[in-house]
Image (cartoon, rainbow, N blue to C red):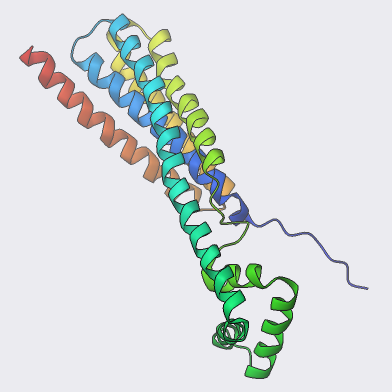
Length: 231
């Protein structure tokens, strides 16, 4: 007798993983860039810490609000589509069955089997069948605004805390160097962890995250130097 086994698909993590990686990456990059830019302008260590702390708080709130609003928009669209589909199922179930059967024919089933599958699925749960196969809405991909907002805020704060700790432990004259180097290491680690959790290529993800982090810090450092000389 063949034994069944439970499969763990990585796509189930896509909702929270996207928000977590985005939040942590943005926390490290934006806060480190802010710190490097302020420090490059010849600010005191206290000013740098103040700017970094303000960036952490403001960034976490912004990430939470932004994620909640954007994912809520997706959720609203999903609900509107489901409401429209519900009305169509009540108004003309036969046409909806034809539509579902046509989808299965396009996927490779013969017409008779596609018709039987569509009829049986609609008998069990017509809305779920149409949501999944016609609209592409499922429990895996369903929008979760609160989860995305909380995940983004927490991971942004965790990411932003790393450059701030580097400021605290670094000598005054080496703040820029310590923050830049440590932040790039954090970004490389984050890229590797995110890729591992999502089943992606680790080296490619690590290089991508580290490169753009370095680019952002280099730009803000240059701007900070220019402003510092001008002032």
